Length: 189
View 1 (tube, one colour):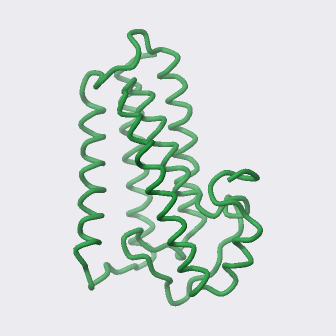
View 2 (cartoon, rainbow, N blue to C red):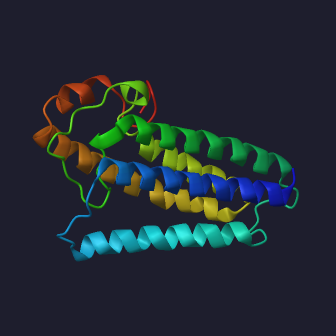
């Protein structure tokens, strides 16, 4: 596996991920939230720092390498990254205009429960895809930074729980949808 080609693939995936989000945000006409709190600004800053850190890490030689001969680890990581990228992007596309930035935690005026496609199986395919994407990226980069997923997973879990509590209160039909789908992994979790 050519390491330069692998790193270019990982970078292209990250760029595609961001491009899809930006394109769909602009296409929907979503306006930035005017009422910015320190919490929202902090979350945005952390997201930007993580993204920049990942980009820099991708450009560097192995950071905190796991194995000296990481061929199979890189191959497995690339597969997990690809699945995560596909799930996150497909989930975002299927959500369409029913999506609001993670920072805002709001229900939009004309928002509806989406229960088709990936959302027929899990309530949070974007979160699932993003966690898989990051897990796969760090494995493909042969980095012990993969352990950061152990800290990220509970944050994502509690964010999803909080989001669901709000959706049950404010979005008609979400409670029955929640009762028939799993949170992250079809038929399991």
